Length: 312
Image (cartoon, rainbow, N blue to C red; front, side, top):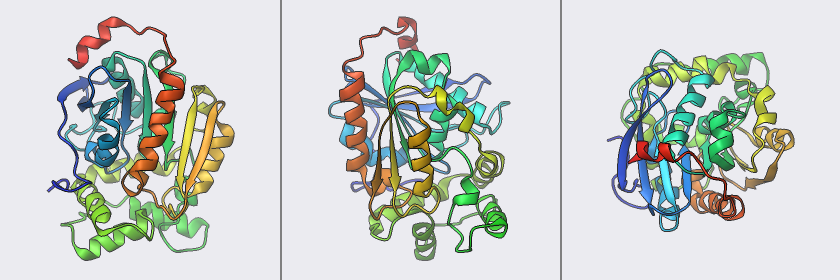
């Protein structure tokens, strides 16, 4: 089972699904939830996840917003990468294709690799045309494996090499078991995470194809460096970090908050790990809604009307 099917962490059924084609021909699974005429929010998930990861946040936003979530290439119901392969350029291409298909001004929120996607697209014309504000959640722009603390070793070359080997492994994760959930909680979640939250995340992560998981880790996360492009992300941008995040510790968020030209604030969630949209969906949804209220609701700039047809 790719995700839990009942309870507060089960993904809601979309109002509409469609396929969007990226620059290299990769076909992306896209879901639309919520109010058709509401302000639009676009959600980009992280490494090894899928649209199902955003379920608790979508539930909180859907009453008042049009919510668009898509599966990154190779994840969920989006097929494996096309000729563009696994790269930050491909991530940016995919987001830009979704933004164009959305056909409206939006607030975009990215978690982990989804946040890296937003940063990779900084300065692109599609972002300037369509994005009114952004949320970067549990993410970083560089030095991921140098500063991650998944492996309990002192910072340095040995920890970097071990973390690169562990996160880049293509070994199968196997079925979701109590041991597997304990390992996942240690690596990705805070100490107060509930069993329901851990199981919801474990089912999604374990469903990610092992070669997809390994390729993104080796070809993107291990060598990530988006520092130079941060100045181009000049829309109002909020940053969220988890105090106990081992994958992207708060040092990344603090660096982003200083580097972004229009940071609206940094929120460090006490006791939380890397999976804030599941561990604290109210906080994440509230941050998105605040960006909509403060920057999208007042935004009257038009967008190209032809793009609207692609999501219908």
